[in-house]
Image (cartoon, rainbow, N blue to C red; front, side, top):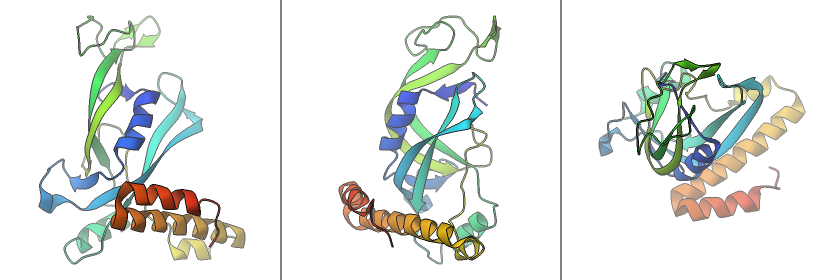
Length: 203
């Protein structure tokens, strides 16, 4: 919506920087507004889709945990029901590159206008060199149209799947639970350690 995109380098940096970052609502950074925390991320390339500028579609998938309490019971119900879905991230990009001329708009204005065609090329800003990640938020209208929450894989879904898919999903779910609990008790180093040790283990 803002005629911006992240560079591949920026997406890789986001994967690293957002581990441990908290989830809130409407970018309100109060401690009482914290609802969840990211414990793992991965960069995914969807070869079946392309971006508006013609490259393979890439996105960051983050895994977050939430402690079930009476205070967040309604929020969990809204997530499960698909009411709370859209999310937005908050981070700092040191470079804002013009897609037409390569000029860093953080340093100088090149004169090219975002969302305007120059020949066959649509001008947009490429965000690069991510210096910090602040938080991610549930919002009504995210800048990235497709940014949102997907629900946890449920036992009901598993019951309707072939046996091999059930085992595969159970293994994957258990590994994520192990990483989540390790992060919760020992931080990123503990989560990284158990992620390596559990990688080739089955249920």
